[in-house]
Image (spheres, rainbow, N blue to C red):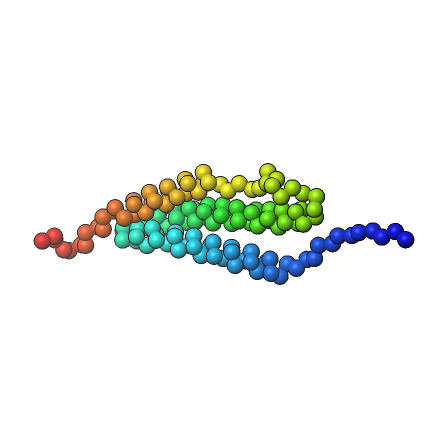
Length: 134
């Protein structure tokens, strides 16, 4: 009698989907808090708060999108790596297909955040009408 070996991966997506959702919501929440800081500082500028808000929305979309993509790619790679290692036909030291993080983009986004925060903090509050400085 011939015995054939079969491999079927279980599809327990409930816990992995929950982890993905929690990680994604955490990233989006952190980016929203970071984007709100310069926008709140810029609110004291009359007429320029909308520009800062638009700039921070763009910054937040780029930061959250690149971070979510990088984390998702890393989680998928780790699952595939573990599956290949457990098969027994894969060298655990071979990590040539590991996804790379977009460090250059994150560096540019970090520099843009610092510049925006400093720019928002250096703006002067317009003088109140009807009051003279004493």
